[in-house]
Length: 443
Image: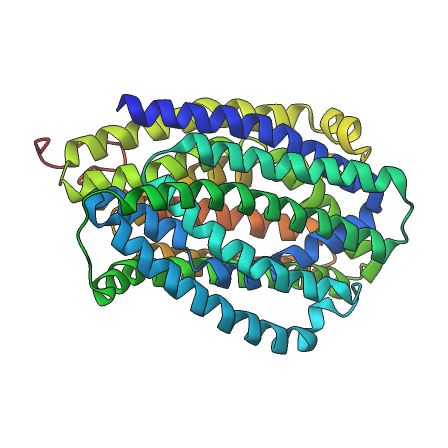
């Protein structure tokens, strides 16, 4: 219990500093790129993340779950197999991506170099994922926290340095902004993989047991396949969403340029401000996956019930004040940090999305730890379909426009959170009011 909260507090503290840096990064992007450039930057990121996601194959989640649940004497054997597979799969993926990239139309309006920067990210993310998964499973959150902070700090320094020294036209400015993202990921890779290899070489000298590659593959794929499917689905729909939103707005009579600007204000300003406290829920998720996995393997239902109550109450404790601040100080926040008065109203309308999203990540960690990845995927499918239907039908109406889009975004967060919560409660034997359905004993 103590180690869980110590690790969580460490991640939250580091993530809080990192989130401040991220906030400054978005301020710099908004100032240097303008609303149109920011809209272009935000619109292409989901497509990039969809490609890069395939490189990680959710190894941080599956490896951390494996490490938390299993005897440390088999860790070295498992990691040896994972390293071999990663080398092979990365080489194959890089060939496939290099062939497919020139034919992806989403990159057509961007600088030609943009495509090939994505290719560089593939091996970086692949090998960083192994290190992340190992340290998450060992609950060595100091290294994870430092890596997360380092990534954002390097990106900020590169942004400030490059935009201070040079003036860029719009397409080049968006390219440079993405270059800083790639550079920061490279620095994180060099740090995390270095400390991982130190640990890996140390494990070679310790007593160990060998595992057959098929056993390792089966255990990792049971987690990686459904969680990757979930992330790919989310990344695919996130990549599709900007085009759906701008298309719906255009159909409602909004010009293409204005639709892109409005999307930039929602995604690049309102969502950035409202999602600021998400670093807390993300920190909880990182700690919860190995913790829940271990408790579930030990059949410690009492602990799972108790921890869920603490997580939900803790999320309420920071979530309610956060959305109140966003609602009542929307204009001050958007004008002070982003010099955008038009974003204030969007920030106010999105408060349900912000509040319910705070709960989604820790609940998703519960689903992963409890082995309910299939349910997590189905929940995401239903919530996204519902959101897209609302976005299209209301966003394309002249009387709603962006207000209709925001209704769809809010509906997705509310529905997804409720589906996750009910599934977790059912699995660990509590009602939706946190009351045990039957008496259980801690194992």
